Each structure stands twice: as structure tokens, then as C-alpha cells.
Length: 303
Image 1 (spheres, one colour):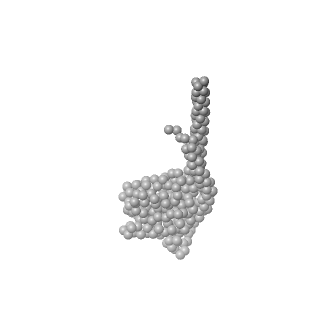
Image 2: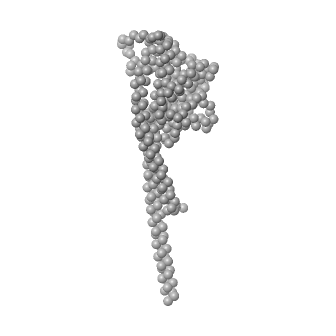
Image 3: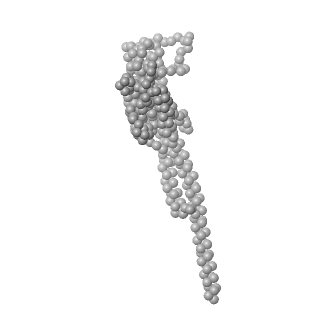
């Protein structure tokens, strides 16, 4: 049954109100993403230099540190899942949750017990709905994470890693987050955070290259004790900043799509309302003409 003109106008007004909301959210996300990208770029130099320092200590010393020691038979693994606190960001949270589920299935297939560590209300709601146990959770800072938030998560993960597995600790720590590639592309990523694997890439010395002589004060073990927690916190902060930029980019894209769809629906409803109005006018004219013809016939017959 075709909708009446009154119903079409009501639906059009409702869609127009929704369009204003989605347009406002699109503009807010667009303004915040610039700051999020800037924070991610500002954190890169510190992370790069800290990586070089940790690499130097790990490469030019013979210290076996707990954070760099590979377990022979790992049986328990922690997975840090980074999602958003709010929705309306398209498939952002669902994509990273899907990657986390795939990682959990892979680790479980290797005979490892997976302990989830969750950052973001979307991941927390996902686990609560399925009544799964959670080792730790954090929320309220997905769109603007700070170093204090990253350090809090890093301390919890390092504590779990240093705890023996017999007492509830873990042998491995993995991080699942979304890497910001561009405004149109955000890719879920999975990295193994601990045991630490420091890779210098292009900075790796050539076989014939002279290596610098390092002296560690007071000793290499103490330097590692100070640097490695900072390194882990820096990596987690980098993941949080990448996830924040990805979340805002996904929300801007989703809200732009919603705004465009609302505009298309408004145009469709406007066309349908015009057609309904024309049909009503045509019907009213037909009724008037029919009434006039009936009166004329009645007058002619009376004469």
C-alpha cells in the first residue's frame, strides 16, 4: 500500500534530522584525526631511538633477561585486544575482534591457553555477551590514549609475563590492533610483543662493518631492567595511537557514507511525496469534475 503524503513528509523530516547528526559526527572525526595522526608521528622518533638503545644492549651484551628469553615449551599466551570505546565506526571494531578470534584459535590449536587482555568497551562487551573470562580490561581512552594508559597496560602485561605459568603467568604476549595506513585503509595487525624480538632492519651492520664499542653503566642487566619496560610501554603506546587514528578515520568514513545515504533517501522521499501530492490533487480535481457533472445532469433531468 503506498504511503500517504503525511507519512512521507514525516519520514523525510526524520531522515533530515539523522543527516544533521551524521554530518556533525563526520566533521568532529575529521577535526580530531589530524591531532591523532600528529600524536602518532610525534611518538615515532622516541620509539625509534629507544628501539636502537634496546637493540644495542641486547646485541652487544651476554645478559639473559626474562623479557628476551624464549620459553622452550610455551603453554599460556596473553592477547591484548585493542578496540574502540564507541560505535558508529563501520567495521573498525569488528575487524580487529575477528583478527583476535583468529589468533585465539591459532594459539589454542597449538595447545596454548589464551588469556585475554582487553582495551576498549567494544571488546569488553563482546566478551561479556559470550560470558568469557577476562584477565584485565581498560576503557575510556580509545580516541585519545596517553602514555600513562600505555604504561598501565604494559605494567600489567610485564607482571603477567614475569609470573611463572604455574602461578597464573604467561609465556607469550601478543597484541592485536588496527594500523593506520591511510584515510581509506585501516588494517588489523597482530604482533608478538614478548618474548622480545628486537629487529633493526636497515640499521643491521654489514659483516665487514666496524661496530661501535659499548659500555653499560652500571651493568648491562641493570640497563635492560630499565629499558625493556620502557620499550614495551612505547610499543603499546604506538599501537594505541595507531588504533586511535584508525578509529577516527573509520568513523569519518562511516559517517560520510551515512550522510550520503541520508541525502539519497531524502531525495527519494521528496520525489515520492511530490508524486503523492500530485496524485491527491488529481484525485481532488476528478472528484470536483465528477460532482459538477452530476449536478449538471441532475439539473438537466429536473427541467
